[in-house]
Length: 284
Ligand code: GLU
Image (cartoon, rainbow, N blue to C red; front, side, top):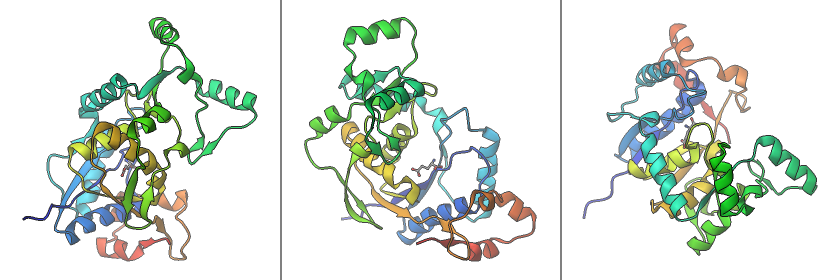
């Protein structure tokens, strides 16, 4: 029997130029694939058209080639696959796992203030469920009147349908039980872009057959939600490898200020890739 092939990926968002932290993260994913004799993919996560610029994508490709990374072609560009995310959202909608939410940020703040408290999740206060309680008629009236809306996960319904403890295997933290209540009824389809990071990343990792996700520990909390979406969409949960973030020589996390020295600037200052490699120290 042949062993399954490891597939991993690096998935930058072209919101700016890459810096040392990205170089560190890219090498983590690339080296993992090499060590496993696996495949390495590159994906450009540019769904947020308010913040992404195609010129940055070109720069990212140049920077990654300079770092010595080799990836399979074609590179998956998320903005070219919006249909895939829409299809997944339709599936969730048809099964009643997402509902329209018309709230503005202000509405949510007001509701939380009136309640006097709100369960605090890993990404801020959890959505207090205002629009979950709307009747079908109320929803239809609002939609017909042109009110804009996002689509939120109905977590309670999703977990009822799942009816088992969701877990994932994490090479750093060990076997993990998912606690999606920390993110609550998260936004799955944003008002402005017609999808979300969470939905797009889960759909793409599934479509691309990614078996091992190597990414920064800053995305650890999102995994609690991603495993729920994988379950609902029938996508196998990959193995996760959340690596520490880059620190400076003293072990302190890189400040934004230091991060802002781009790879392009370092290269143009005459730095070699070997020199760069010796500067990158992972944090604890
Ligand atoms: N595009 C995300 C970022 O640049 C990474 C997504 C992921 O690795 O899951 O932070």
